[in-house]
Image (cartoon, rainbow, N blue to C red):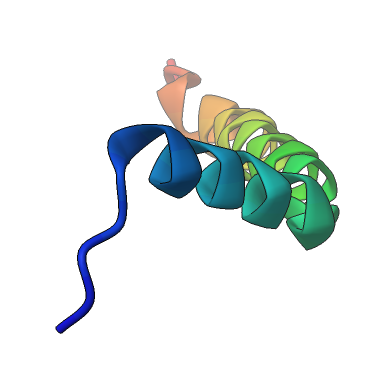
Length: 53
């Protein structure tokens, strides 16, 4: 196993993080999906709260 100084490792990690690119898009898609699911569930389930008098 080779020894890498901390500064070299940090530089390589920062470079790898910049190459990934789709992480922000995936994060936004997941947040929108969760919020949309919660809104849809609320919209569908609110009809069951009606009282039949």
